[in-house]
Length: 87
View (cartoon, rainbow, N blue to C red):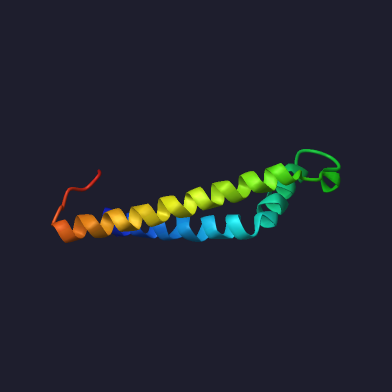
């Protein structure tokens, strides 16, 4: 897999993960609780504040935007014939 394909796959992953985090932040909350449960007691009793969910959604939107921007920049670079790679 060359670096161009890796960047495209990374951008697609970022879009998917960002959309998931933006629309279903509860999954991220459950993951965090599960990770903490291995080292701390009573993590099931933790409750997240609405501000934390808003922040998770903002992170998801930002991640989605970054993925879309990467795909657009790759497309523009391919159209202009720019073969410069970041290695």
